[in-house]
Length: 59
Image 1 (cartoon, rainbow, N blue to C red):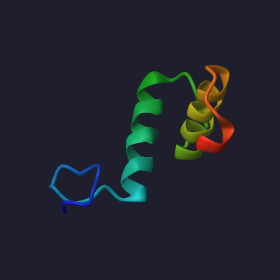
Image 2: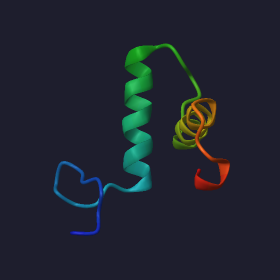
Image 3: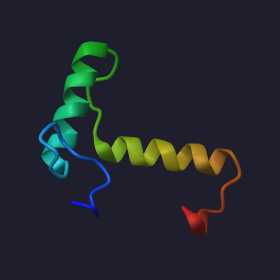
């Protein structure tokens, strides 16, 4: 799986559901936010990039 950026505990590519599971578990333990999703992470990261001067076209 040379093309996979993230692997699960079995060494296989991390699936979309696997990512959501990790986020759900982390948010459950943190008890700070209820509606965390991969989309929220992408949106927040893009917002931070823009706030720090990144070019919109590169985002």
